[in-house]
Length: 130
Image (cartoon, rainbow, N blue to C red; front, side, top):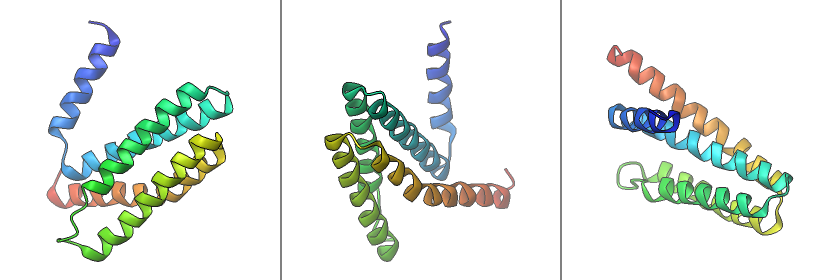
């Protein structure tokens, strides 16, 4: 089997067997990968590659924003939506101006949130005995 095929199959199994919290963390990891690759492409400079990765990052941010459930946690969702919309605007502006520093700022802003989700998933798993 080709290594990329094995990796895709592993990732598919990982997604199917992950908890919602673990999927959220995987989503953030993908977002950070796309953002990092976009910043690197901007610095290269490789406008085409940067645009592809910005598009992927934007799609992930849109997904995060549309998956919020305000009926369950209105204040939290309101704050997260504002944050995701801000990041979406910034990533578009970074792409227009090819400003990798803006991408770095988005990563810095979202890192504590991702880290909090990682910690929450870890605590939940420990409480569940996993």
